[in-house]
Amino acid sequence: DNLNQSMTQQRVMFLQNISTDQLARYQADLISCRGILERIYRPREFVGAMRRDIGDKRDAIGFIEVPNGLKRLRNRAIWEVNYQDYSYFTPRSLVTLLSNSGFDIIEQGIAKEGLLLTADIRPCVGTRGEVHKQVVDDMSAIQQEIDAFHQYFVDQTQYWKTKLEEWTAAGKKVVLWGVGQREMNFINTLKIDESILHVVDVDLHNRGLHLPGSGHRVISPAALRNLHPDIIMLVGALFESDIHQLVNAMDLNPEFVVV
Image (cartoon, rainbow, N blue to C red):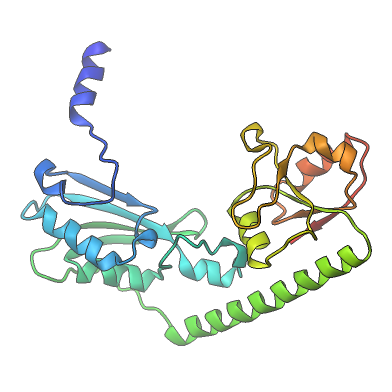
C-alpha cells in the first residue's frame, strides 16, 4: 500500500490555478475541464492556449463539461443565473468554440438530466477540428426562449416584490429558508430589506453570519421558536417536506410559500 501511494503521489500533481502555461511541460494524457469555461472571461483564448500547450501530442484527450444554457432558459431558472458565470453555452456554441480552437469533437452529449453539456475532444491536425456529430441550434427558437425567459423574470420579480410589500403592510413576519446560490440571487435581485427578517439555515458554520449583498443575518431553525414566523419562504421545493417536519416538530404552524 505504501508503494502504491508513493507511485500515485509521483504521478498526480494539482496545479491550483486556471493558467495553462505549465501544461506543455507535463505533457498530460487526459485534460478534464469541468465547470470552468463558463467562468472564463474570454473562453476562446483559454481553450486556444490549452490547445497550443498540448502541441504535437496527438494522443492527448480531453473532457469538457459546462452548464446547459438552453436547459436554464427552458426551465425558466431565473434564480440560477450566477453572477460569476460569464457565458452559458448551447450545444452548438460549445462544439464551435472547441473545433475553432483546434480540437476534434469525438463525442458531444448531455448529462445530469440535461443540465450539463459534455464534449470528448482530442487535438486536431489543422487549425479547425471536426465535429463527430453535427449539432445545429435553431437560433429563432433560442431567441424566443430568451424573450420568454426575460418576460418571466420581469413578471416574477414584480410579483414577489408586491407580495412582500403586502405581507409587510399586514404585519407578517417572513423568513427565507436556505443560504444557497438561488436564495442569495432571489433576495439580492429583489433588493429585499426588512420585509424578510432573517434567513434560516441548518448548517452550524453559517449561524450568526450575514448574506453577501443584503446583509440578512443567518439564524438556526431553533431560533424560530422565539420568532414565531408567519411565513417561511422556500426558493424551490426540493426539501419542502423535510422542512415542514422540522418546523412542525417545534409546534409552529407558519404558511410555507415556494418561490
